[in-house]
Length: 56
Ligand code: SF4
Image 1 (cartoon, rainbow, N blue to C red):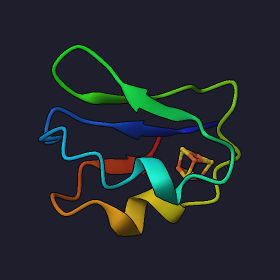
Image 2: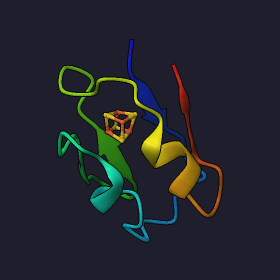
Image 3: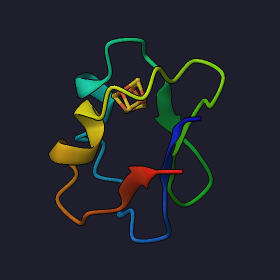
Image 4: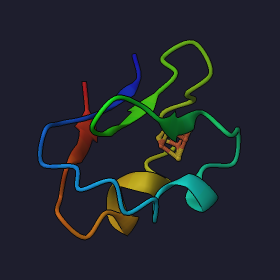
């Protein structure tokens, strides 16, 4: 299981610093979460201004 970022992402980058395992990086048109690194803590979900992050 991992958290995922939807197309609602506006590439603001706010979530990046919230992740304790550095699983979030900038992708093509939106940010992406490395599913293998994510520990499902949910910290990024609360930080996202557009509600683009959710549990898979
Ligand atoms: Fe990182 Fe936690 Fe978000 Fe997973 S749920 S990407 S570990 S902040």
